[in-house]
Amino acid sequence: MPKNTQYITEIKQILREARTKAYAAINYSMVEAYWLIGKRIAEEIQQGGHRANYGEQVKKNISKALTADFGRGFSDWSIRQYRQFYQRQKFIKATSFLDDFGLIKPISILGKIFLKDTGLI
Image (cartoon, rainbow, N blue to C red):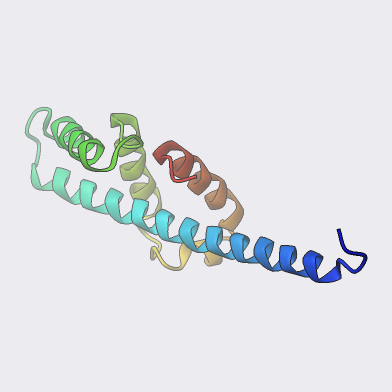
């Protein structure tokens, strides 16, 4: 290595900061997507009224279709989690709940779990 490596250290820092910013942007977008998916699932199940097993069938259909198109990460369990996430947070706008309630760190952890599950990281 050359004697003056300060420029290399600075380049590495630029890359680290860019990766952190990229992850945060992806993470926020994915959390918003999960909230919107949960909202749409809840709406569809509500349209079915009280028909026996309608909600379970909707979740299974979604799981099967998303897994076929996008691969792993869309199990029946995951689909239930999306819906529950929406139901627990539906009184908060999807684009503002992170800041309003100081949930950036917990949501970041949740987002990381989902991203790993889908194979994106």
